[in-house]
Length: 496
Image 1 (cartoon, rainbow, N blue to C red):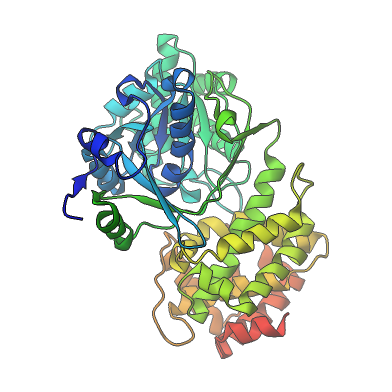
Image 2 (cartoon, rainbow, N blue to C red):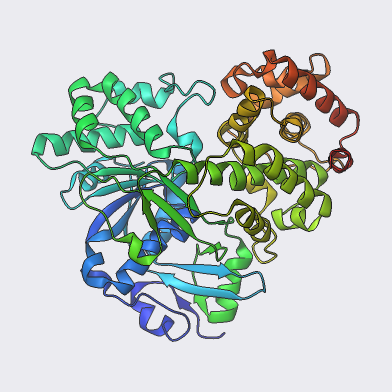
């Protein structure tokens, strides 16, 4: 297309002729939600629900505009791009048949970066119009030991915040600074709403914040405990990393220059505990589900979808598969995933009202197979040290307690050891490893040759699993088999 339009407020009228754009006056939107961690998932999920609410119910939704917050230096790029684009971005829904449906999302109306100066962020959070602070800070952002669940006070940024509460660096420092201002000014507390893939995510956010606040300011902690709500929620939408080809597609097909669009699958789900301190958006009007207890839904999703992703990702990485859909197209991987879900994950689940588990598992395999998504194995394997303790190891612990099947999960953990040690697939091709614990994982894994249990002796990840005779025996057998011949597909076939 010759006439290239840059994505910004000034060009919306022209862009509207090419793809759907916000059908509401963005100048009228008030900021009611502060969101920390503006990644692809937030923009494909919560920001879309908010956009849809603004479109369909403008009068009741306009108080719920979103201000994005970046608290790390790593957030600078997304801050700069979205600031230049007036908070606008394109959401591209990729269907299995190849159809791509783009639309411009307009619910993100401001973006502040705390890395340079935390004060504007604190002031915005303390503003009386702010009713909710929501989070997608990844599993690792909650700053707790995965094995014990205890808050990590050794973190240098946490140590800094305890001494300098006016200069926060982590989410806990920002939240306490803003809540302190609200308390002092007599402003009601905001709700803190976690949208991360952690079971009981609201409870975890509450426990971690209170633990930190008690150390920093015990009176404030008491006020937080009484006044702040932390609803649990279950969020679901597969959102791959944006690629240059996605950016190029928009420019070539629609003449639209968007420096950071988001791609996602058609499936969308949000189940939220109806527990808010200071009002909430009517998300139920646009497809979200408010329930008294989210826990069964959380467990189902984490132990089937998220764990299933890790099963495919770690085994697929060693085999040489590059995307999740290519794993599912491989019959052995597809059958292995289903056997894992049926025999090891499902027996640990609670009854989930309104959900047919067999149909849910069928839908997961269909979603993973979407050839138009091409979710990278490297993305799924990123920060595995933060994911596996919650997605997979808790399931393993329950099956050990209940004498259930553990073999399929054990192979995945053995594969994680080989992956961490060698950093190569079975053909000798390098694997991209993205994990804050990459060095510790590598050091532990490379001792496997002399001590087969070295990797699982990392108690911060595995607790006492190395001392469990049944698991240790199974793990030793599988890790030695992979080290002898890393053709994991053959090992998987022998287990089907």
